[in-house]
Length: 355
Image (tube, rainbow, N blue to C red; front, side, top):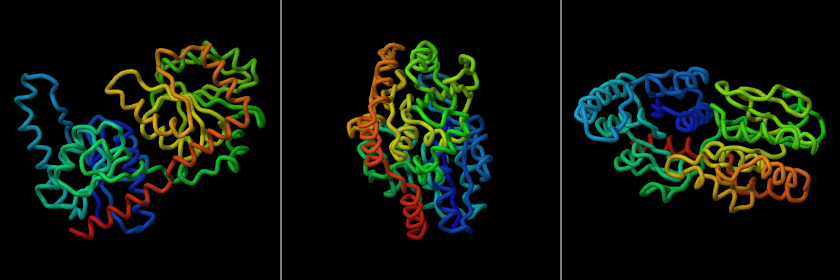
């Protein structure tokens, strides 16, 4: 089977595509996979690092207002669709799978033009316009929030195998050693996505001393473009964490934004979290976190309400309440799903076989 994965722009689009690619290869090592992405998105780094070939096309964002870009839009779209159509023919692609983003649009239109089976997965509570467009061309539409896109069937977000198979308790000692954390005591994991989150960083900096005084160690991924306090006993700052499985295993509680992948991973591994949705955009991060919070697996606080005093009080009391903390972890784990990558791989195989 030859598969074209159409995803680009952000890690939220690219990571689930790569997780699906891994699942397809585990099911059948002869499966050939090509990723279609944009020229400037994170896929240029993420895809080669995972060992998959990347073909790029110019990103064609939808202009927000009338002007030259809108006039030029049809020609740009035709060019990217022509390139993608040639790719489907040259590679003898059996099925196209899209996860959204500007780079997915030519994949969807080329699949329609060539009558290639098309599968779409939407991760967010508000579907992007690319997936709403692609969903018009196929019955194979899946979504974490099925109400977000017409005709979708529910399917959780595909996770990396090291996350999906993580036993936090069994890996705890190894994870603590990896990050040079104390063997005993509570650990608060703070991260704001791949670029960090300045709001979370500032709050942690102000709350750091009281947290340390309360016996809480902070593992802080602050983002390579940001600054953080210097390392000290009870505080381990790192610009980026490339072993999130071990970070989850080392921690007892997380403070984080509420991207779709973050919410899915934390729930799947059963790590309680304080979610601070990004206050811009269409409010999708709040909607991403709401189900696991409603299930009892986390807390939700508005960005504007997050203060150092609130964090010290809330995180401190929670981390020292073993019964409440373990109950939240169990609730998150019951809500989370670990095998969506394999579910989606089977759906892709079925779509390809159906022609």
